[in-house]
Image (cartoon, rainbow, N blue to C red; front, side, top):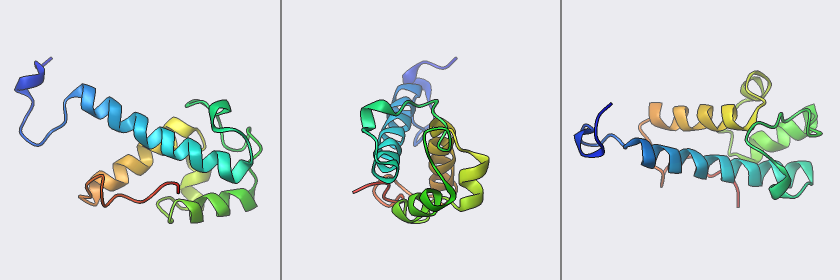
Length: 107
């Protein structure tokens, strides 16, 4: 394992990556809370969207709320919050987007 200072230039260290993952998960949980009508603090990273009351209609609403950062197919294939957040984060990295230009997850 590399020491933090040995990471390649431009590559986040594990601590920074964990913080970024947590931020994406928090914003995603906020979007779930609005769409599902439940308090954000009752949504965990291992929660399943459809087990928490999600339906096909709420999945469409979530995709819209996420500015279509995920498709309905993505939502059905990755219904667990942490997995969905990783998918969104991976898409942002693939597109070469910075955090500032990544899809806005919640307002």
